[in-house]
Length: 61
Image (cartoon, rainbow, N blue to C red; front, top):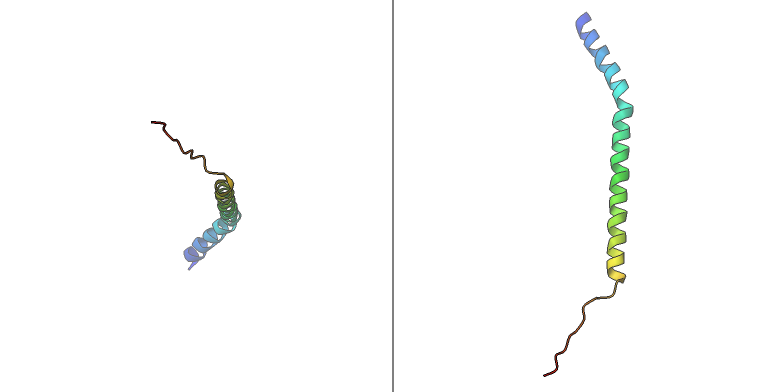
């Protein structure tokens, strides 16, 4: 029984120390995802506002 309590204690301390780091990683990934979505939306808006650069060429015979 003593061995099981020691293992549980070690796991609890590890979880207690790792939790802030894991929370920070999740937070950073969420911010990265939001920035990526904003960049894509801004690029799509720019592409929609940009006039077509296609030029019609005619040849004279």
